[in-house]
Image: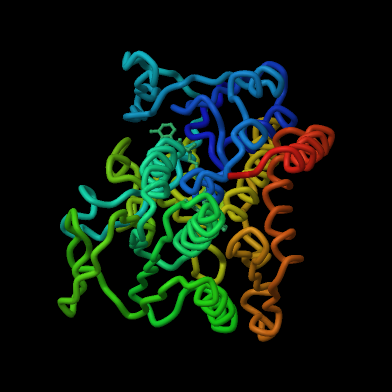
Amino acid sequence: MSRIVIVGGGAAGIELSTLLNKTTTKEDSIILVEPETHHFWKPRLHEIAAGTFDSDLDTVCYFTHGARHGYQHYQASMTDINRDNKTISVCGAADGVNYQLDYDYLIIAIGAVSNDFNTPGAQDHCIFLDSANQARQAWHRMSFILRAGDTRTVNIVGAGATGVELAAELERVSRKLQRYNGTPLTINLIEAADRVLPNSPEKMSRKVQQQLEKNNINVLLQTRISEVTDKGMITSDDRTLDADVQFWAAGIKAPDWLNGIGGLAYNRINQIEVNMNLTTTVDDCIFALGDCAAIPQPDGSFVPPKAQAANRAAEHLAKSLGGFLKGKPLTDFIFKDGGMVVAVGHYFAVGSFAPGSKMESKFVLHGLLIRRVYDTIFRLHQKTISGMFTVSRLMLSKRLKAIFKPNI
Ligand SMILES: Cc1cc2nc3c(=O)[nH]c(=O)nc-3n(C[C@H](O)[C@H](O)[C@H](O)COP(=O)(O)OP(=O)(O)OC[C@H]3O[C@@H](n4cnc5c(N)ncnc54)[C@H](O)[C@@H]3O)c2cc1C
């Protein structure tokens, strides 16, 4: 009998908690430590910030989900690891009480946060989209701005998937609300690299930029922010970009508090160093996956911080650890990248497929159909954690709801 403690119920953690129930035995116990009451699919946090997210249909309550899928949810945050005693310290999210939890196997999947690269003023004057809570606070701010009436400016730093999707969704909402005398938004999407989505094929970057500019979003490339104030941003070449609301969506790192705990090995962006079989390089009883882990690949590269990679790693570890507990060896996780889809508003998305191959830039597709592919990625995640029947019911409910209720 083994006690498996999973820390973090995001894209990787909730899938792993669900799937381990099928690959382990009844005697094994599975505990999920997660401070939130509900699971949100992180790639949709920009929809919460823009007021278009449906929390009735698109969230999962850990308490009831755990009861149905054989794991126990502790609503708490991990704060420390004691490898000698095989315990973790946690802090209750509701009452702030600190306590210890024993583990036989510990799996860390706490995700990542935005990297402000120590830019002065960023923490004080920017909104970050690292958690559902922050996204809700962003919406409180945006809903006030969107009612102001006269033109307001939004600065968004980082033209990766988060920044692009946020800019497009805010523009759509402000455009729709103008029929109710809502605020027209001027949106500046600011990127230090020479193209949007710098880690995607160039053709995909071009298509996304065209669509953003068609939607009147100002794309400012090769623009590095050196300071943020309460009034705006100052660029490294001393320009000032005044704004009423400022978002920081550039870069990622694992949270600073993680680095050093438990005496594990960490890289320069605080990610836990693991082996290809997902055990940490220091301790075989501790695993890490998702955005908080530096997972090496046979070609010397590392698994990218993507929702798809977090999901694949969770599926892999559920099988591998399940087998290991029955006496088989752990197996290596080799990530086969299926490409990337980025939504630019509600009716348009751009996707690149066959990454790494010579055909990569040829397989850049865009339009409404690709937007549906983007939705499918979320539905596949829902199917893994809730089953096909539940997903079908949710999709039907959503369609019916859309007929009777506007989505903003
Ligand atoms: C707005 C936005 C848009 C994105 N768009 C895309 C996209 O289009 N495509 C794509 O591939 N990726 C996208 N991403 C990235 C994607 O969301 C992540 O790669 C993915 O969610 C990583 O999964 P994870 O399980 O590692 O972490 P997460 O999904 O971030 O989950 C981490 C979990 O750990 C919990 N946690 C944190 N600290 C603690 C603690 N101390 N103790 C216990 N639990 C803790 C958190 O509450 C959270 O539930 C986007 C991200 C954002 C923010």
